[in-house]
Length: 184
Image (cartoon, rainbow, N blue to C red):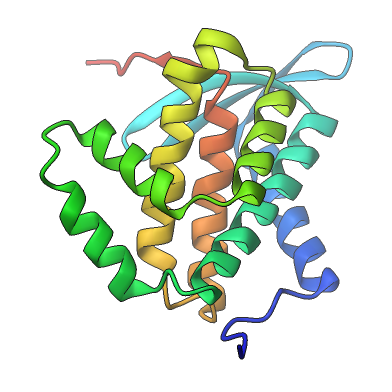
């Protein structure tokens, strides 16, 4: 089988990871909380959240975000293309609950590697148990499926790849966070 989308080079991977890290630090770092831990206020869609992370956690999250992106590319290369995704998406519409739709798509598209990466993200973001199962992972899975919907059959579009990476990176950061109420 000919691979449609090649893995990104180590140079490009490092460039994107550094850009993700530097953008978040420059734009969203608010204050130092304790030795090596910083507070971030981050927007994601119409929600703002606050989280605390070390630089190492932030760098690990960037690396794992690119791991996710590359595994999504692999899924696309292995036949889960736009047509297959559209069919699964359409078939999932019979479920009335939007979360159930995302979980069905996730179940049908996920690979052992995708699950392994999600589990590593859980560890880096310090979530487990009920919090991971009912709060963090559904949010992350929703973001992964949304990113795949945008990128499927377009993994060669560098700008779109980087934009989706930035979205997914912030979704990873949101896993262990508190929502900030919008001021009215």
